[in-house]
Image (cartoon, rainbow, N blue to C red; front, side, top):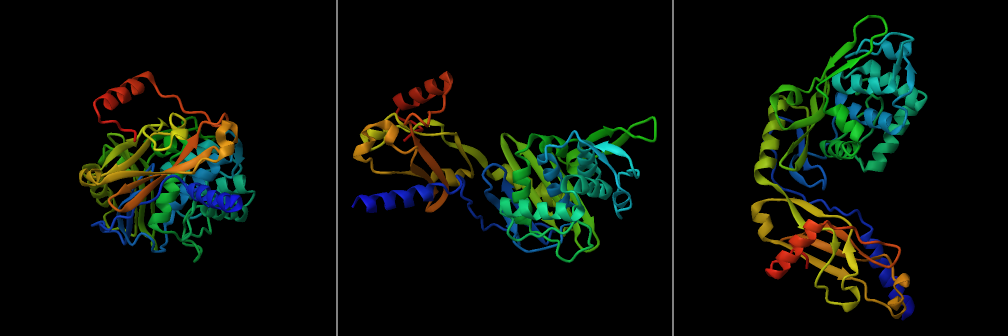
Length: 385
């Protein structure tokens, strides 16, 4: 019997290790010019709008989001890179690097993201990957790590020089979601103009971001990357923020991508709020006395919801049955259950519930938050249940 209990407990706990945010699919199709498109909420990854989001297509220079994040994660941004002739003579858009020029990797990432420099892409790849081929291997390794299961990279810039270079709107949204967690990436992506040292002139290079949503067209845009080749057509990944709601939009093969993104963002901001479902800390009013004032969640739980969805929001708490040995709190597991968040009948979140056993400490809650919770509890409208 003990063995069976342990197996059941192990199965439940393994289920809880699923990443905290489940994705709620939305059937509403984006009314856009693009062949493929998606709009997601940045923190949870919830899909708000979509159109052929899993179709494999050529992606042009939005490829460079992957190149940029690998450069940033290399920890070598302050390295001096010696620019090769191969990099300088890469076809297409350029930041006009010179053969043998020495330039910091950080500057190359600015040139890559703002001006879409293919020469910068190859210089980054050769320095970070040891070779172009070595860097491409890293690109595909990172794609697999992120969960981009319908993508393959064959170069660091997105030129149409390989047939096996493609992705999907969904995968590129995953990549941008991942990249935006890096402050260095978010800062570079959101820079309108950058001045970079010029080795052959007295004046600096001045790079203005090609992302017109950021520089002039949409006040809520916070960054992104443009792309175009003859085969891929126009591709675009952008981010936007308004009233605490952070969104990511992707379009591939679009005739009117600026307006596609604006219309998707306006839908997202008009229809959804980032709703606080539960506050971090102790979960109140649990059925089992063992867990009273001891079971907690580690972070505030937010989810983008429409006004209508808020009406059907509910939570279910599932906890492991305490064993006799757990009388000593140190013998209790750290992970003891999950809080399932439902919108109607659809599960949208799985939140791990932890136990204060000496190894896991409850997160601190501010005095103001404690006062608010007490007020709502006394008023009979507590947010913890």
